[in-house]
Amino acid sequence: MYVAVKGGERAIDNAHAWLAEERRGDTSVAELSLAQIREQLALAVNRVMAEGSLFDPDLAALAIKQSRGDLIEAIFLIRAYRTTLPRFGYTLPVETGAMACDRRISATFKDAPGGQVLGPTFDYTHRLLDFKLAAEGEAVEAPTSAPRTEPTPHITEFLQGEDIIEREPSSDAQPGDLTREPMAFPADRSVRLQSLTRGDEGFILGMAYSTQRGYARNHAFVGELRIGTVAVEMEIPELGFAIEIGEVELTECETVNQFKGSKTVPPQFTRGYGLVFGQSERKSIAMALVDRALRWKELGEDNLGAAAQDEEFVLSHSDNIQATGFLEHIKLPHYVDFQSELELVRKLRREAAEAVEQMAAKEAAE
Amino acid sequence: MNTTFSAEDRKSWMGLLASADDARLADLWRAFDHEPAFDWLRAPEAGGVMVRGRMGGSGAPFNLGEMTVTRCALSLTDGTVGHGYVQGRSKAKAEMAAKIDALMQTDAADTLRAMILTPLQEERAAAKEARASKAAATKVDFFTMVRGED
Image (tube, rainbow over all chains, first blue to last red; front, side):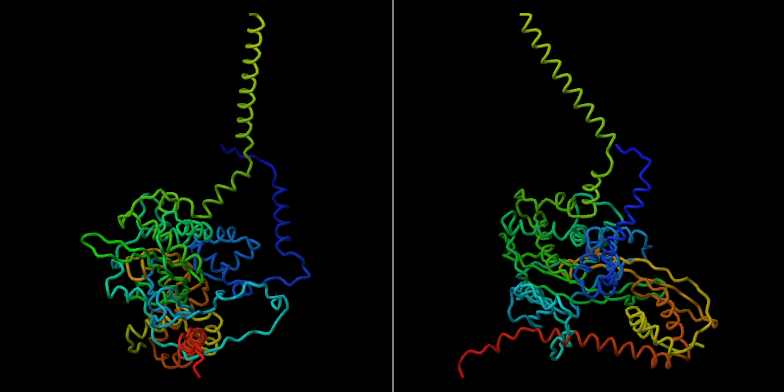
């Protein structure tokens, strides 16, 4: 029960003023600029864009500054902002096969056409703190080599040639849109993917990890992981043709999973898919594993009762803004609720005490 | 006065303007040094578009998330209509894009191409090549391992 309570305005104003002062911190330390956050905390910016579900690095940098680096608070700010934007339309599906790849690796094919391109990765670093970064250093310049000019093909294309992996049925069906209609179950795969790509990285990671540990294990290989930019095109009604309206950085993960076959269909690998805004590698791999686990029904697998197979469980709990809203509201005044509970418990205790007294009186009388 | 151009041409310059750097476009526009008279058909407004992906990269579409876009439309005094559709929230950038789109349909096309579009195109290609060159340097070459044979 929510009851409007007056009072506290001065305390709230002063609390917010102090928040602003604390946000700025020690004024003898230079203030952070949005450009610094955008350029130097790019992976935090990417996470805020992915889970805020809005690709705009400057806005994400502002949200991170405003939230003092609390990324869920920053995501909240972005989600709130995006509801104020008029929707101009839907883009054509991006062509990830035409991605300008900064990174492209396969854990399944060493000699994949296009090669294993590591990109700016943390992999193979020693995870030792680098104290050189504590001091201001010279700008580092990355080595270069003759660039690849042709597009890098998807690795699953090669497997599809042999029909040894399931085909993604090509279609132009209108996908569901969570920002327009609320989630309903059973959810189709388009809605599941939209929900997973903006879901909390920690939650999706935990769910994916649970499948690896044996709760609906699906034996995933990273068939391909690619990070880079793709052009975004949209049909413009007033022009009568599609134009490029910008570019977004994406991370795409395709998993090659345990095969299945039957008397009529020869054994075939299955697939999971992850696609996330920005350089968000952990998230996209986790998304692909959870996508695959949630596909059990359409692939005719058994329901093992695992959490990662339960779409109601996964999709209803993956959104960190819904979760934090409900979780954190319990710290707000619930004086009246609590008052009624308090009275109820007191009444129950009084009744219990009276019952004991009556019992004692009865025994004494006997 | 309108000159001939193909839809493909127009698509290409609008795409180039959409992802141009705001500050760089403003510099080039200033150097062009010609402010055409115009009327708004649609004043600049910032909004969002829902970006779509495909399942497995090639299957059925799904909604990935939104991106910010600013759009506007204007008409020059001779009636030529220009549209601006640009990434981000800069109304100034959308306005420049719409003016360029309109002027590209007039006699100013060659000058604009030389002063704005070609530099943007070249800088974009150079930036892409620079990134591709760095990526290429991180390509694993499994066949250059020293095998101790020589």
